[in-house]
Length: 515
Image 1 (cartoon, rainbow, N blue to C red):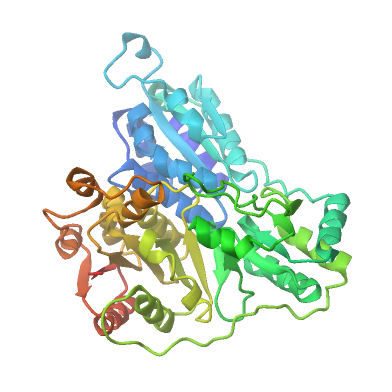
Image 2: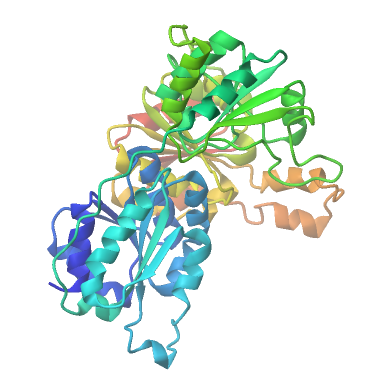
C-alpha cells in the first residue's frame, strides 16, 4: 500500500466519502488510489473555485466535511476565494494539495511555490507530510481539525513521493468532540439583559438560525418581548411555514440604522455586533446606536441550541408558545412586467417543500427573503465571506449532500461568470439544480456602491467597468455549451412557466431573467 492509498482509506474510514477534484501530475497516485479503493464519490470541477465552493456547500447541508484535491500552489490559489467564503461560513473542508516530490523541490521547477504560504490565510490547520509513512496519521489529524466546531479548513500538502512510496495501513480520525457548553454566568448575564426595560433583541447567527435553536429563541421572544434578528449573511437559515421567522439586519447601512436605532440591549448568539459591509463617508461602521449594550450568550463554536434552551429556562420561558412562527400563506402568482417584488412572489408561490435556496442574486436578491417567509419550509444559504462566485458551486455541494431535495440557485449574472464552469459539473452529475440568472447585464451592486461611497456619477470609462454589455452575455448559449437545458423569461407569467418546468426536471435547468 502506498501513501496515497493509505490516505484515501483513512478518509473513507473517517466518514469522508466525497472528494471534489481538479488534479494534476503530482496527484496522479492519489487519483489512482481513488480508482482502487471503493467508497469515495469523486466529482470533477473544471476550476478550483468550483471545487472549494462545492465542498463548502456540502458541509453546510451535510454537517460533515468533504475532501478537495488540488494541484500545487497555483491550483490551491485558484480556489482561495471560495475557501475564504467557506472559512467565514464555518464550513469544514479537508484540502489535499499535491506538491512536487521532495527531491525535486530544490530544482525550482516552474510550478514550484510556497504551498503552505498560499494556504495559510484561508486555513485553520496546515501540514506537509514528510514521508509516506506519515500520510495516514496526517490525514486523520486533518479530518479531526476540519470537524472542530463550527467547522474548519484543514490543508494537507502531499509531496508526490509520499504518495507513491510504501506506507503503513490507514488510520481513523478520532470522534468529533462535542461543542462546548456556555457558562452559567453567560446565561445569567443574557437573561438580565433581556429583563431590562426598553427595546431589546436577540441577534442570531451560525447554528442559532437552525430550526431547533429558533424554537427556543421564539419562546424567549414570547416571554420577554425581544425582537428576533438574524445576521444579514448566514451559512444556513431554516425558514418557512411552521418555523420561527427572524428579520435579517439589512445590508444597506441606512436601512440597518433605521431598524436598530431604538435598541438598548442586544444579546449575541453565535453572532457579532452588526457592522457595515463597507465603510462609507459620513456613515458609521457600527450599526447599533451608541447607547446600545451587547452581551454574548454563545460564541459560534459553542453549543448554541443548548445555550438558548438554558436561557429560556432562566427566564421561565420553557412552556411558552414560540413567537413569530410563520404560517403557510404563499401569494397568488402575479403577472405583468418583471419586477423584483414580482419575482419574489413567483418564487414564494412556486417553492417546493424542503427546497434549498442558494442566494447569490446580490442587488436583485435583497428583497427576496421577506416575501418567501410564509412559503413551504426550506433552507436559505447566503455568502458569508462576500467573495462572488460562491453560488453555483455551493449549489452543487448542497445537491450532492441532499440528492432528494430541490436546489434553487439565485444568481446575479456578474457573479455567475466567476464560476461558470459549475454548470458543466451540474450536467455531468445530473444534479437537481434550478439556476435563476438575474440578467441585468451589469455589476449592479457596484453601480450602487459607486454612488454610496461618494464617487459621483460614473463617466464612460467607469460605466464600462460596471456593465456587462457589448456584447451582452447569452445565458441560453452559455448553458447549452455546458450541457444544461435552459429557458428565458421576460415577464412574470413567463418566469412562473419556466420555474414550473425547471422544478419538474430531474437535472439542472437554467432560467435567464431579463431584468
